[in-house]
Length: 262
Image 1 (cartoon, helix red, strand yellow):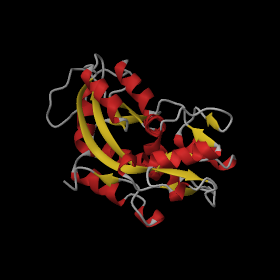
Image 2 (image 1 turned 90 degrees about the horizontal axis):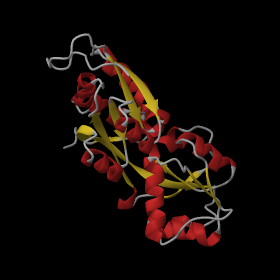
Image 3 (image 1 turned 90 degrees about the vertical axis):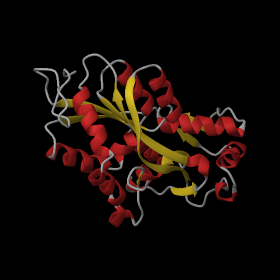
Image 4 (image 1 turned 180 degrees about the horizontal axis):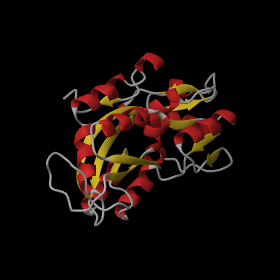
């Protein structure tokens, strides 16, 4: 882990610090291609360089607790609030949002499209014992999925329910191969090529998916670069880039900026 340091808005940094920082981030920002666009933009205008580590939000928060990351870009609000309450972060700010969707085989054999709520959709999966792929990786998506099962009053299990232990892109691929349903963020689903899976259920408030940037509070972390990155990703150039990202390719936004539209 690099020692703290870099030029950040005139803020005095510890002597001898390098400009390298580690950003632990959810796999959805990596799988969608968003970070491939944002990180070079940041590095072009900064003395800081960024190493991204795409993991589930739970793993990213654990990295922050151990001081193995300088900044986090995550989407697991309840876990983030616990992280901040434990004194592990010096700031937590909104960046963007999209939504979760339940995707499944063409034709929607379990009839999720007729459901009125996400919980009702999952009840249909359980009643029909349709295959369901869970990430099972303590990610923000996995946490959301488990909360929806709980809301439905169902403890999923049996041969129809299985865990991949992998990121979103890999889980979508497995679900596609096994003709299974799964919960995905919309951005990664749209950006994952060669899928036969279709969106089976979408569009309720319970499927809202928010992303926050957190500056880690831990000895030895690069607080200067982390703060600069946090300010930058919430600034106008980055927020406009988020709004425009891949719209021409997918004919719809993958992410919606939270600061630009305030």
